[in-house]
Length: 379
Ligand SMILES: NC(=O)c1ccc[n+]([C@@H]2O[C@H](COP(=O)([O-])OP(=O)(O)OC[C@H]3O[C@@H](n4cnc5c(N)ncnc54)[C@H](OP(=O)(O)O)[C@@H]3O)[C@@H](O)[C@H]2O)c1
Image 1 (cartoon, helix red, strand yellow):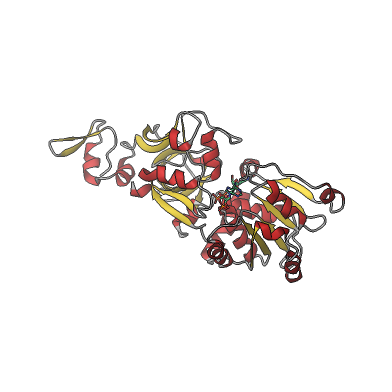
Image 2 (cartoon, rainbow, N blue to C red):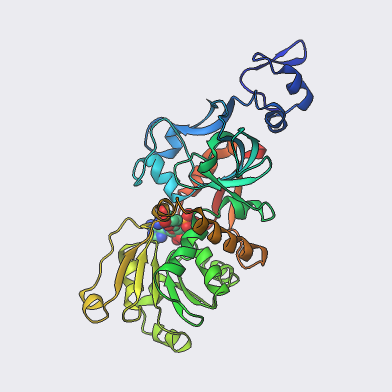
């Protein structure tokens, strides 16, 4: 059984040195204990880092003090939180926003409200919540957060869908909505199609009747991966090399040339997407997994007048922070797709918080095709 740092065993009994002993004896555990008193949850376990560097070296599981719950705060217990590439980049110190150190890792995840401050209006005990913005530090068992730091989610969707909803499906949703006026029958081409973003793109596009051409790197299990992605709602899964072959022309007899290209890789992969874009179409870059710059052929600009754009969901959320309704409307639409079985969580590997080292290591390996998700309840 987990004990807070300030609880000690004395003569076979658990005694809280901060005066909460009665409730602690009654409830016998971390989660219920927090719910019953809110007084003893003054430390939590968190994956924190004090320096930037290799996540395997700098991230450590630590007991971290929790501040008291203010009038407009909520005490939450995290249920599950994924490890995304941006989390890794933040720890490495290479991301666009970097929290002050020491920091708790993780930007995404789902938590349950355990206790609310006296002035909290929009949330109640038991609600599921996700971060409104990046930088919250979600790899932890509990947190005291401002009511405005989080937004509620219905708790009738699968846990893994909730834990992975706020970044990748939102990114996919916005990129499919905000750059080109896509109609049923239109086509979108994307690389990193097996990524969390890519899997959401396939499913949201399919729900709207939009074709997707999905490009992945070659790998020994290509056939298996291709079947998995096709089951999400696409007919076209290609290796990067196939984009360079003349036979690719056959594909465009079956579906229209793409109006939109979604680039999460950069380098040659992005240039190949661009070659197949319709005249006047848009290429939206949202990730740079290859760490290579995007090269735009002059002909694409002169003869096709393609639009070269970028998207960052963090900027989108910050821009819409005053008007929570736009974010809410998007989450409602995504949850509706989840309930209809049209949007599933990405392929995931669930890992207990204690096994974070294994999860971090796997998250940094190529060809894994599975999102590592830290499950807090199992530690
Ligand atoms: N701009 C935004 O708002 C936004 C939002 C969400 C995510 N992102 C970015 O989008 C990208 C994908 O995120 P995610 O969470 O969906 O990722 P993920 O599920 O962890 O998947 C990683 C993807 O990157 C591919 N990849 C890794 N190294 C690569 C390389 N050297 N060359 C080509 N492909 C490589 C992987 O392909 P293999 O299977 O072949 O290794 C896989 O498809 C990241 O760069 C992330 O930071 C941006």
